[in-house]
Image (cartoon, rainbow, N blue to C red; front, side, top):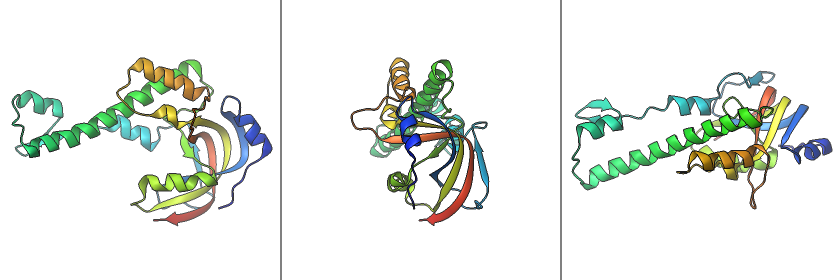
Length: 212
């Protein structure tokens, strides 16, 4: 995969992390396998799969064969026997629920901050995540157990460069998330940054490569 950069591209990204761009090549790793060369991906108007997963998250558990929410489980079973199986079940599920809820809170706070203070930046809820060629090995490890495609894209739109250090999901207060959102949207880099790019606009597929 050929790494493509231009001097103007690098220079403009050193400011607020945003650039209006045309005819710039970057890459996207997708779980979808039926893309076609020449197809145009339009992003920025509809929710992306990540945000759809956040807002659709509705975890259930089973009690005597009946599916219910964990809050309903706690209301029905006020005295759960602390057996090893019960503790393991609750820990595993509550760990996942806590993580997903933290994702939702983070993304909603980041979007609120973006709308109010950085409206020129692409929304994380409707964006497409793209990368430079030298970032692909890292992103390929994110879901290495499924078949995916690497799309080479010619971008025409708005690209934002941020540090995902500020995106750490934790039991932060909304105030702390807001502080981190300002750091992220202002383009501030941490001491050990990991760069991510989010894009709004039209992305034309120029090459497709399957990976496993």
